[in-house]
Image (cartoon, rainbow, N blue to C red):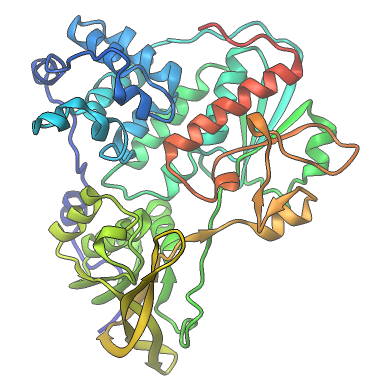
Length: 455
């Protein structure tokens, strides 16, 4: 067994990482599904969308060939509506709330219809929003991910000058560096970013990390307000023997390397174990298979009923041939000459319910040993606690504490600081980060005394 790159041919990589959910190929195909919509009053699909997209409205606009109006309806609520249509867990959100589910009929493919309109706007470059005249206010944003870009776009529309400080070489955050490429391609991420920036008034400075090239103190003294949206990204440790052996990697860096360096450059093992069952774990497992791993096993300490990922994501892993071990927890990584050879796991059972009704896994004393040459840790992410605490911000174990509108609590005597997205909530969906940016933008404009954008 060995961990190597260039396992496949270029055509095989292209096939394995092609779009897993192709868009509508024709107008007629989109109209067939759009015309099924019942255009519900007080629509549950809209209520379930964290950004409040008026779903019946944008679908009805599709049926009347008003594609530009449809795109405006989407992007006015969610400027990253194109990307979210690819990566949102829609079965838990809009499509899961569709009334057709109550009739035992297929839900309206809302995400696919949303993609149909939003991607048209991005591809053609429709100018759906106009920037107000400059109002003489400057705002700094730390992080060019979904939350930072969402806030920046609202502020730019209102005439505020925005400078985003981004530690990476590209913008987009999680969309660009943290999601499987077969869901959202690097090319689309770049196109969506350029579309957002086309409003004007937004400048991104790359290679600028808070705590390294810039400090919160500097930003507060140079700008009228600051928005912190640097997300999370520190992998949770397993705290088991052998975790430091060569061949043990974290899923965040594994996926980052695929997105940053390309498929052929990323090494993968023959037999891979992935620890966890969230979206990141699924992305790591499926991409390991698509990079050429012969066997991938997902190890999860709870049951299928408690898995964090969606059933759709689980089915992707199953279709890719990934094996799943439920009620199984990593106990030790074993190897020789500094390289792993086996993963020892504990068999678990669910204990008695606690006061909240939740049943925690309990070690049965039985063990299971997997022959592996690579272990990918995807047991969750933790905040940048050292960075947050060194900035003097109130926090809960590294998660920035905020009030209404995302107002943070900076050290005494310094300007108003706002924060949102994963650095506040600990890690949710892209669509939640977008809404956090919108909420903070509204509060920031009020603080700056600037009128809210009308278009």
